[in-house]
Image 1 (cartoon, rainbow, N blue to C red):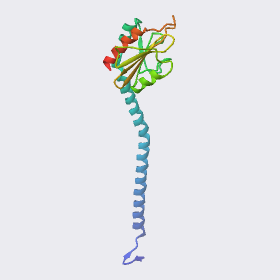
Image 2 (cartoon, rainbow, N blue to C red):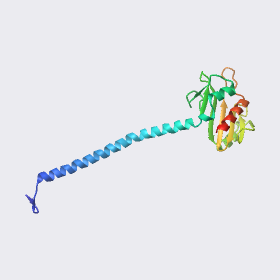
Image 3 (tube, helix red, strand yellow):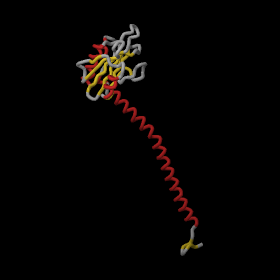
Image 4 (cartoon, rainbow, N blue to C red):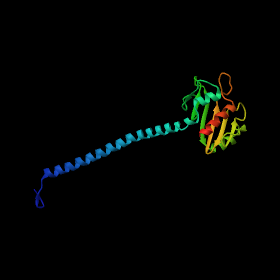
Length: 188
């Protein structure tokens, strides 16, 4: 058989066709493999990125307050620091508990606009406190005052002393919270 001036070689045409088909399949397989790898690696990359973001964020507050600072100011010994949500009430950036996991103190740092919001909310404001940060106040308005709100630059620092379940009084007085607040402001 001839095609034009050359003989038709069905075997050669078939081999060329098969080679092209195999190469196309190999390319598709390679693309599918790469897509599978990308889909498999993406969640891993996200998880690793989130882990390092949280790890670096958690560490950024370490310099603000130590267990020793809280023990010295409060007089409560044997304190430890726990991670957020590790025990009931541990909702701060830094959380300090007794050896029985009773919350003693939490420290939170928010953007500065929160200070005005807290101060204007009913029940939060009891009295201004002078000499701490740019501005400070204690609360709540009724009951034992055990929360100190501090405005420093573009930050709102929130210190909250928990109640000792043995005597139902806050672990720290306002004077002790103010002392802690001054330490935190210096280190911010």
